[in-house]
Amino acid sequence: MRVTQSLDQTQFLASISVLESGINQTQNQLSSGLQFTTASQNPTAAGAVNNFQQALAQSQQYATNATSAQSNLNTEDNALSQVQTQLQALRTLALEANSGTLTNSNRSAIATQAVQIQNSLLALANTQNGNGEFIFSGFADQTQPFTLSATGATYNGDQGQRQVQIAAGQTVADGDNGDTVFNQIKTGNGTFAVTAAAGNSGSGIVGATTVSNPAAYDGGTYSISFTAPGAYQVTKGGTVVTSGTYTDGGTIAFNGVQVTLSGTPAAGDSFTLAPSTDQSLFTTVKNLVSALQAGVTSPSSSTSLNNSVNTAINNIDQALTQTSNVRASVGGRLNSITTQQSVATSQQTQLQQSISNLQSLDFASAISTLDQQNTTLSAALQAFSQTQGLSLFKFL
Image (cartoon, rainbow, N blue to C red; front, side, top):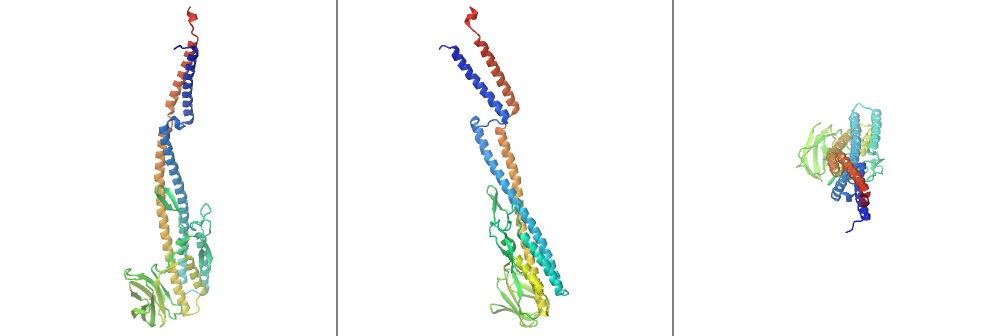
């Protein structure tokens, strides 16, 4: 094969192009701080980096979701804490209103304070988060959940509870709908409620009510009626369950339940024991306000007021229990989020480290390589220059 000067030059230029390409790649590595910027430069490592980056992006999205849910739940917890404060204040007013020394003017003033508390509770039930969403509206977060009505307040939201994914296979509810929090509150002691008949003429007042034996209580509705002062009978559907004598402050017990009464019921007075039902917190406040505003005009109306106030206190206690249970649930969800955030932080650190190990550049090694490449290129150019000047005619 005949080696011509033209072929020699072509081969040299090809070699120079390879050297310059290597230098350019090293310079790009130093500029970007990465070992490779395209998959073709290192297909295996690039594939692994892509997988790690996808996992990292997913973990970061979960973290964003968790932060959002955490913010909403903190807003809810703060609102419920204030609701409990208002309920405690309302309970104190109810206890004050039960005093026999108050005048109707005093009770009217207490009713005015109760109305103010009602307005505060309504505002809290209509709490919005930082995005302007109503936190107690369920899925209908652009709809104000509660508006005042003649019986208390109307719920305008839905029954939804938004679930937010905070990890693979793990979701958390970022709120509670207002119907659950404010409307589904059991009356009485949470199992049953005792109410005095509207036409009672005696001074019988319902006191403490308890379930002494849950297995014995059948959840039925009973009537406690007084056939004469101090004599009562309990019936269910017209059938006599038990009967006995009663003294002021005594307890009537039957079928696993106990009812304490005070005062002296008159003959013909009756009380109904029925399973607890759901009642809105706002209805409880409204009923208390109405009872206070009605005032006392006779001994029987005084007894009626005492029974109404006692009923309100029981229902306020149930509302406090309900909000405490919801807050406990909120606290559990916040703990789950905090735990997952810690796990996510560790996971993201590991993923970022794995990406760095595969892709980040060893600057010292790259600089050394660039120096070697530049030296090689310089030597090649110098050698080619010298060989191009050689000719046999110089030696003749």
